[in-house]
Length: 418
Image 1: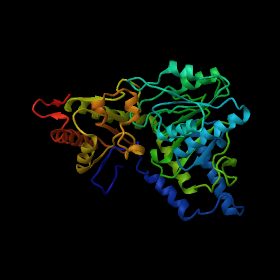
Image 2: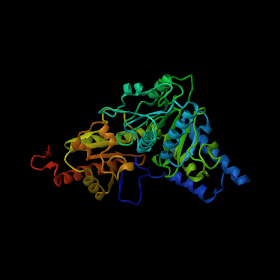
Image 3: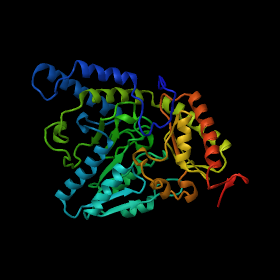
Image 4: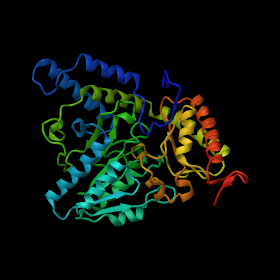
């Protein structure tokens, strides 16, 4: 079901998604009839607590987690990322004051980058790992940055929110554990949960090579509900048993003492329902999104001159396309697209108010002439072929109009001004 009662083609699903009707129905049930506090001791509340436990078990099962109590419900992936990095670092320092280093990449989401910048300001050493022109992580630099006895936390995203480029998390996490088993490996999987296979199990009878999305060496993993057709305001932090972790949010016993605050039961139930839908038909939905994404990419490459696809030759999530154009301002194109009823974004929604070029594309060494003209198309399970056709025509027309009015474009020669 596409977005109803609007004129818009919505292709900004990496920013947020339409809440699934099935999730809305579940949420309404718990808003209207199951309003109890699950920490209370009378029977309706105790029954609700059992249902909350069922939802936790559902999320654990869908992620391949071994135990339901490894699932911590939060408000969003930003909170989960903060809790994971700060919490694991504090626990590591408590056990060994020399273990205070953090390793991450230069293309992480701001929810990780800003945490690490704060740590640097507070005197904690942070190793920043770069990427190549394809968006792939520098594995040699990654290995060199790991310091046994000193590195406390490694935080690497699974899929980039701007380009969709996928990092080899199974390989990276196993490198970390082989280097020093006490290093905590955290993964921000906000853009991959529900789009790519993720298996957090530690089944010794299966090799990592035989399990799609095997994440057996990952200690902590974060994601948000609103990226998988659940509402905003609910997220998950997976924390493997025996992972040293100091709670970040204090003031109550909820979530087994790991995250204080009365649980947002209706939204948790909605998240569990949405996740069940996304993972239940992961292959079919992923293949359909990839087909539509590839159609969009091929058409734009054919019809828009001086356009490049960022991350084209790297593994990508099936729903994401990031392109850069020369000879026009991105803001002008976005406004023209909006006038034509098509919603896309320029870079990350979390940094859209900034005039600075994308830190991701800068790290990928995208030429300066294209940095101000980059666009992200991100599809969902509800995207239709007709919407892709409309988006193609709208983008071609918008770029042509923006270029005609741009001081960066030579209208006589039909090419960018050097």
